[in-house]
Image (cartoon, rainbow over all chains, first blue to last red):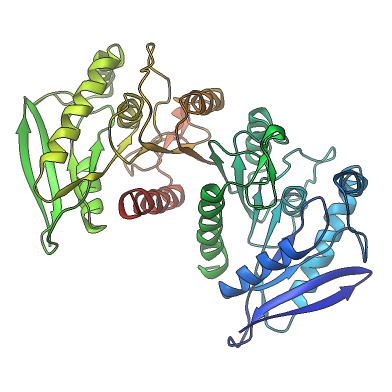
Length: 237
Length: 237
């Protein structure tokens, strides 16, 4: 049975999901929210990860009670962190520590996935040199922090990208390829045609703004993530 | 048991591989060779596809007995066809007809995979509007033909690409994305970091020229192909 439990750590909220029929340490995965803040979408993804056998935490990067009720509010909340990338990395590392300390998580087998702004957050976690096995960005914002960490990038990277995403252009796709290559990272980027931003979100219905749910790409991307996580979290260390 | 059988059609050689324990029509897949011409590498891939339950033909695009015994000869053989893209499409379509006519092939469920130059050939088959369900290019040469077909692109496309491939630059990767988007194709392109040209071929050992076997990318790319072929050839029509 999948059971979800709310927690609050250092003023940030999270929801832990796990399959209670499993016993013993297993891989753990963080789920980083899109620009609106943590909510039902992310909690649902954490439950989906629990169904794959992982312990998952849908995390909050904005702080308790800070959620957007409009796109303008979402942009404002995101901008606070976009302007302060070291804080993004620090909050992600805080959550990684929470995940590692859970009694049923194997701290040697941790990953993180994120959506839109959350995709940038998991990339920043990897960029910071954090000790986890892999990160997956769905329609992630791709721009590098102004100041690059000098730490080796330990996490493998998978980016699942809509080619028509107005928030992440082909030029930015190429720039990320160059950046990750320069860092010596193990990386993969999967570009999908006929796909814009927010392709995982059934609520995204703004094709004129390049933001549109795409059920085919959504299914393909989730399957690609599952394959990647199986390799990184369940394979040999 | 996997059984391979040589055939010759209109002066071109092929090797058909199938699992003889299976009965009834099943999906069929063409395997297009790299610049040296059809040989043991492609026949091995056809056998691997037969192990996945498909009927596969390792095809020949140069003509009976025309195989390269040196890189210079390979470039010369390839150049004949690179200079004559309609001939590439015609030869690929001829082989697709051979595949469709096999009694144990379901002609509604056909695909094609290719390596290097063969990747260009399967892309050209898709570009020609041929009636097949999907094509997969491994470290494919990506440049479009000078004259584009006006036919709808029926085949879904998967490109498995080494980001450091000197024969297919990031700019050409982006150009293919734009081309396939313009054609209204269903496409995916998967870029792999730390990966050059010929990453599937254990004989490729020229890192200075950007051509190098990469066992990790090879395994990931084959798995991505298998997922793609399962969706396109075994799913709903």
